[in-house]
Length: 202
Length: 103
Image (tube, rainbow over all chains, first blue to last red; front, side, top):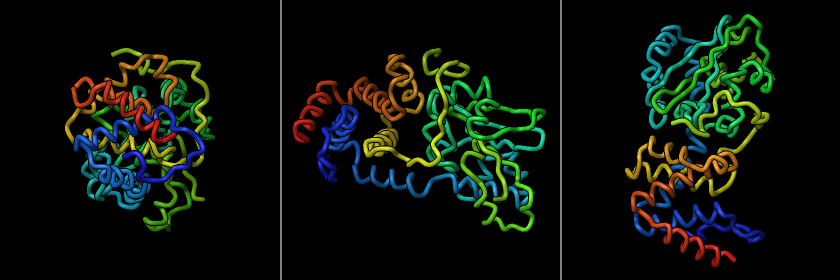
């Protein structure tokens, strides 16, 4: 579909743009794909599936000890209780941050990431520097994210794969005792659920 | 399979530079590419392991120089050609046609 949306003609299409357009146009012609379905897929991942989902899981675990227990023993089932399941989230493991242990998630080989709870991964998660460094120098990586942990905190790095996806259950910030689940969810950042952020009550 | 994609522990790849705020897709072609991947996957043209393996077969220098969704594009082209869904000639001719139309 060459021109179904306008784009400014101030530069010629790049090589990758041409390759993607060529592929989409041929596959559409062969009736192997439906461009409108692509619009819908993209819209879903831009507006509906993202880290707010994961934040709700975290806030529920902080608020409901029985839920937290289920989440840590069978994450896939506990997460789907909240309605989050599907592609790239079929087998989930949740790892809990405590005073003693801090967890970080990576996919050294590519970009495995829990889509139903976090959406699509940020660019840095998929790029070479993070994948290379975090398994060797996790503290150095955390510093690049502005996070310094006490020296005696054990850091565990989890390398995701196509079969298993990890979500970090961050430590609940101090001073949040009276907060509702909704308020708690607001505190949870995407990076905290990857393990490259620690949360405060701000 | 060992290869350039097996980056864990490699030194000298530079800073991580995490963006404070970034869009889900940087360019419209990335949007289309993502949708094409899901559509062709749903259409049963390949499984995820084949898709990743086709990325891992990329030329190592090309792998490091190109962006994430360009890896996807290369993998999708490779697999669809190998499986006989499209031909290299078809892709090249259509690309040329679209470039001329755009000019």
